[in-house]
Image (cartoon, rainbow, N blue to C red):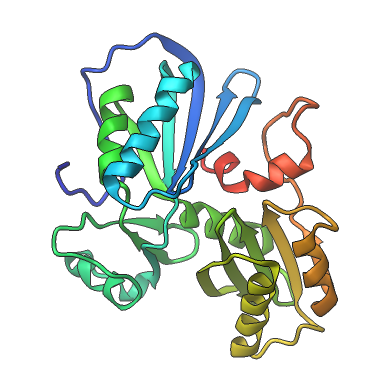
Length: 284
């Protein structure tokens, strides 16, 4: 196991692969693997790809096997890139106000929201402009494999990227905003009001009814009126699909997250693709 660190950067100087002068971003979850390749010279996105797993990884061993299969099938990943970062997608995270955070007691923060074990490897990200610390458990076995394959890289929890970017974009909004980032088996809700993060939570779902129930339940608990807040949707969603339609039936103000990416895209990548991979495209 890796030596425990507070900075989410790991290094390996022994890697010797053919180098590409591009940046590689990887996002890893229990149900899939996504990556994009960015040309640093043109600021263009050369490739975005998602590989869903046939079965959700139920153990670290099965998860590792799924990841290894991806590298067997995707030859483009078996190169050394000019730079690399990773995000981990799981529900083993919690946000802590920076003023209340003590790294000496990092193991205490997760026990109220997640099942943890004595030997869990716990790290944290800092949302520097917002005085927030994100404490989480990464996929340590996957990090070790990637360290052997690529050498130096930095990693974060995907919710760090999601919350940080939304706060930067919407921190001056006058009305409350409820954001939902919808993925295949789960979605994240972020509420921003009065220039502050009010709530971040993650929910598993199976149907559109599950989805709208959790959205409305969150609004009810926070006492924000569906007639007054704006619901902004990102992830695997498009206008007039079943999730958009059911949300539109209950919430007055609804929109899809606009693309504000700093990168250049070819015509093959439409707005739906950019919306689906919002965190992947914003982690570098």
